Amino acid sequence: MCSGYNSVVLGANSISFGASTATSNSFVDGCCDAITCLGGVIWTEIFEVPSGETREVFYEYSAAAGGDWYEAAIVLYSTSNPAGTEPLRGELGTSGINQVNLRRGNTVPLGEETFDNPVGAGNYFIAFYMASYDRTNGGALGATMTVGGFGARVP
Image (cartoon, rainbow, N blue to C red):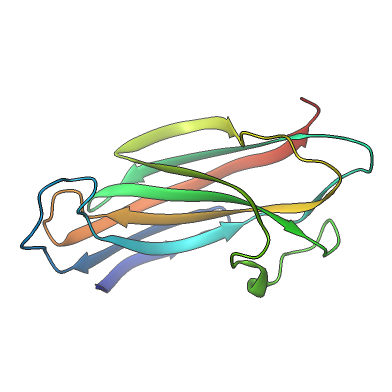
């Protein structure tokens, strides 16, 4: 359904893209009937929560509409790989998902958010999946996302 990807820019901590999609004849609602296209993913290094401790995981990001509104899935994964390394691409599936925050809209300024539940001992990383949805049914979409930082702190 997504085609015509253009203006794709992958930075060290940002993603920006534009794309096109078919319009829908049965389009009624800008939210629920819209087609979504994935723009890319940014992931953090793996970090450790020490044995016997509980931590609140936080992150900072901003997002803005391009051709149409942005959509983001910010996913906290558990992993057995060591802290300080990059996650393996194969880990960006569904098996290690710990928690998910979903966001969509026109724009969100750089700010901090947390996952709902603190995590216990283990190794974790965060993946930021950036997409855009065709809220207007105009056949064009695109968005920009920038990751500002992340961490795990005592709640």
